[in-house]
Length: 157
Image (cartoon, rainbow, N blue to C red; front, side, top):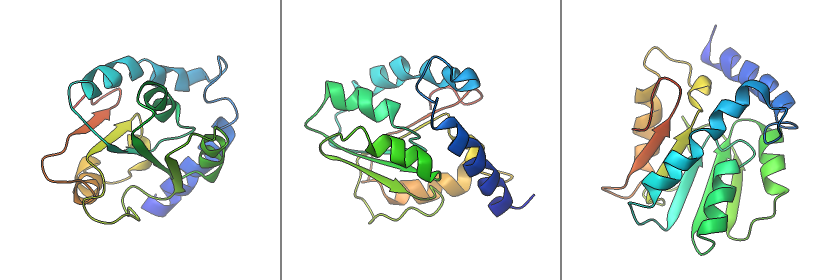
């Protein structure tokens, strides 16, 4: 399967999931919620002002962060238009949502001081899942900024 085919399959799956992603009927996607308290705890250790959520989905993590730190600027990016549509429907002030690919970020260099990626490695189809994504997302970060990555096989990095 090519990278494009894999991403198209991911978009198809998450288009269906967008309607139930944050409900009690989210099935396997409920596991993502287990990481949110850990990510919040880690983010409290590092000051940030401009956060990028790679693979933001319907923006549950950004919603939690925005509730706690409404003065910060948040950007969420996701491959699936329906996920971004659901995220935008929350109408969070100071938050930008973009349909896009984390392997080809549409942002200027060094425009974020923190990047998070929660349970979103399924959309990175390569032999080394982390390397291409990491090099591109790191380019959008200011020097020395933290990156928080969670996943069933990653833990918090």
